[in-house]
Image 1 (spheres, rainbow, N blue to C red):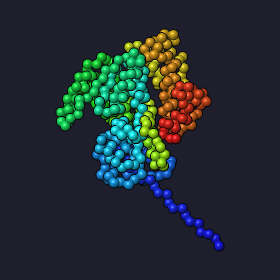
Image 2: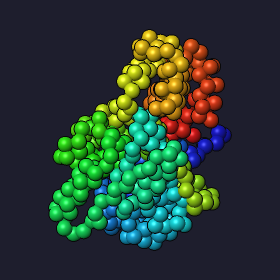
Image 3: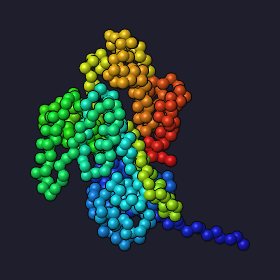
Image 4: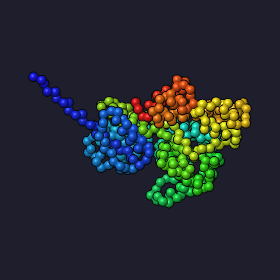
Length: 396
C-alpha cells in the first residue's frame, strides 16, 4: 500500500524591523540594498514605518516580538528602544550611539579623498570645506579632506554652521549671511567640498547671492549624489557617489547571520564610494595655462576613443616635451596618465551601472582587448573588474 508523503511545514518568515527614514536618497539606497539581499536569500517580513531622520521610534516597537532590527540609530530615544528589544540588530548610522552593535557605514575617508582628488585634478590650489559639526560623518569628512590636501601641500579653510536652536527662521537667515560672508573672504579660485548635497546646495545659493560665479571662481562638490537635489541646484551640483545599496546589502547579510545564532563582532564595516558624478558645479580647469586647459578638455571629451598623447598634441600648439612639463607642473601628472585615469573612471562607471560584458566595456572605453583591460584595472585598483562590479552593485 503506497505511503502518503507529508508536505514539510512552511518555513516561518523572519520578522525584521527596518528603522530607516525614506526622506533622502542615501536612506532609500540602503533600503534597496536590503531588498536586494532578501531577494537572493530567504524572504523576510518587514516592519517599516514612513519616518524622517531622527524621528522618535515607532510606538509598536515596544513589546514587538520580532527577530531582528536594521536601524539608523541617530538619537538616544531610538538607541534605547532598539536595546530594550534585546533582539539582534545592525546599526547603519555614523552616530555610534550603541557601540555594542555591528555598524555599516560609508567610508568617509575614501569619500573625502575622492572629493579632494576631483578638485585637485581640476587644477585648484586653494580649498575649503563646508560642514556641519553636529554629525560624525561631517567631522570625519572634514578631517580626511584636509588631511589629503595637506599631503599634497595645500591648506584647507573650514566653515561650520551656527548651532541649531529653537529659533529656526532667524537662524537660517543668519547662517545664510555668515556663509556668504565666509565665501566672499576666501581666496579665489577655490574648490569647496560640502559635507553632503543639501549643504552643497546651500553653498551654491550663497554664491549666487554673493555674486560669486560657479564654477569659475568657486567650484563645489557634495556627497550622496541625490540626483533630484543635484539637478535642481543652480548650477547642477557635482557629488561623490556613496554605495548605499552595498551598505544596505551588507547590513542585511550581517543581520541574517546574527538571527541564525552566529556571532558577529561589534565593529565597523565601511563601504567604499562608487566615484564622482560630475556636473556643472565643477566643470572647470582652474589653471591660467590655456593650452593645458585645452589639452585636458580634449582628453576628457575623447579619452574613451582610444586616443594617444600624439592626438592631444594635434589639439594644442605645443611640443610633447613642453606639454608634459606644463602638465606635470600644474596637475602633477602626465598627459598619458590623465588619459588612462579618464578611461578607467569610465570603466568603473560602466561596471557599477551596467551588466555589459567586459569586452564591451573595453570597446566603449578605448581598450582593444578585454584581457589587457583586466590586467591594467587590477594593477591600478588592486581589484579585478568582476570583483569591482560585485562590490559596486552590492552582491556577494
